[in-house]
Length: 347
Length: 226
Image 1: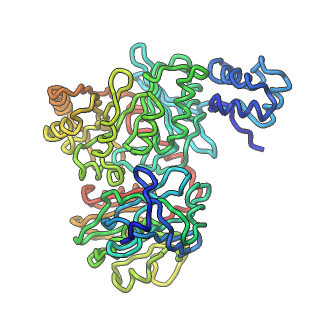
Image 2: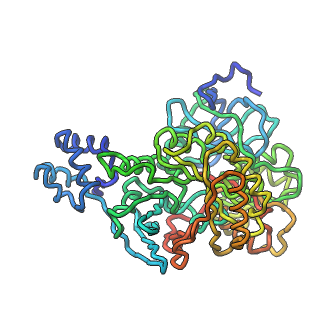
C-alpha cells in the first residue's frame, strides 16, 4: 500500500489524521510542529507522540519530504534545484540570493497548460498538478531551508490552475501552526484566470502578480492564448474591485519584446489601462528560447520605457536577470527532457 | 432561442436549465443539448456546471449561431469531477450554464482550422454558422471514431477537410499525427490565419512548427483546454 505523506497537510487535515489513527486531538498541533517548525525527517523522530501512536501513524503515512536530485549553481549565486515528483515526473525550483534576501521561486505544476509563446515551461505541455506538500517541499528541502526570506510562485506552471493546492501551501507557510511567515513575503503570480484569482483574493492576503505583457488585446492574444478566454481588461476590472496598498500589493509583470511591445504607445496604453490601480510594474528582459520568433528589447529601450511609465506615475522597475547561465531565469524553467510519454497524444 | 420559462438565474454568472438531450456520439464522447438562452458568436465558450457541485468549467459551444439548441461536446476525463457526472445526465436534469464569453472567433476570410480531439467544437460551430466555405480543416485524433462530424464536413469541404489519425489506418484518412501532416506541407499560406484548438501539447507543438515553416506568429490564434 502506498503511504500518504504527512508533509503538506494542514492543521485541519492533521486533526483528521489524529482521529483516524487514534491519537488525541492535540496531537495534530504536535505533528504540525514536527512537520513545519523542526528539522526532522521521519515519524520516529516525533518523540512527543506515544510510541504506539507513531506506529499507528506509520501504518498509513510517511513523513513525506523529497530531496532534490540535482543542484546547479549560477555564477551570480542563483541555484536551480531539480525535484522528482510522484509518478517519475520532475520540477525545477530557483533560489535567488540578493543582499540579505533569499527568494525561492517555486513551481506549482509539472509543465503548464497555458501555452504562452515566450515560455519554456509551456513548451513541455502539462504533466500534472503538484500537491501542497510538493510545493512547500521546494522550500523545506533546499540547502537554504530556514534562511528563505521571500517566496514567489513564479516557477513552472500556472498557480491559479492549481488553486486548491496553492492555497493550501500558502496556508501552511503563513499559519502560526505552520511556517508562520508573513503573507507580505509571498507573491503568487497568474496570467489572469479570473474565478481563481477572485477566490485567491478572498482567501489569502499574499501579494498578487499578474503577467500582462501587452496592453493590446490582439497582440496579447498572440502571446498568451488565455486572452481569448479571460481578456486582460476583465482581469483588471476584477482587480479594481479590490483594495491594494501597503498590506497587499499587486504588481504587473511585463516582458519586453524588441520591436513588439516596447514602444511609447505601449507604455501610454499600459498607463491608461492601469489607471486607478495602485500597483507596480516589473519590466523583465526576455530570455530567448528555441523556436521563438521573439527577441529581447535593447537596454536603451528598456530604460526609456521604464522612465515613461514612471513619469506617468506608475512605479516601474527593471528586474535583474538572474541565473541565466543555468537556465533558471524567468521563463526558462523546464523539465521537458525528462518527460516520459505515458500516452499517445490525441493529435 | 430558449424562453424565459426554460431557465432560472442560479447565481451571478450561471443559469439553471433543464437538459434537452445527451447523446454519446463515440465511446466516452458526448454532446449535450441545452435551450439556447443568449446570442453568441461561433467560437465562443460557456461555463458548464452542476448545482451544488464543483466550480464550473469552460466548454466551447458546438452548435451554429442560428440553431435553437446550444450544444456542448465533451469527453469523459478519468478522475475528473464534472465530466463523469455530465455523461450520466438525462433529459430534464438540471445543468448550469453561463452567458457566452471569449473571443476565439473566426471570420469569413480564408483560414486554416487545426484541432485535436474535442477541440473541433469551436470550428464545428463556425462551420454550422456559415464560415466554413473557404477554410481548410485539419483534425487530429487517435482513432477513426474521433472524427465526430466527418459526415457533415466532408461533403462540403471535400479535400479541404483532412483527418489525421495517429493510431489507426482507414480509407483516405491521413495516417499519422496532424503535426506530421502539416510538416509535410510545402506551401502553407503565410497570409492566412491558423486557428488552433486542443490540448496544450498540440497547440504548442503546432505553433512552433508553423513558425518554423514561416507562418508569422501574428497569424496564429490559439485556444487551449485548461
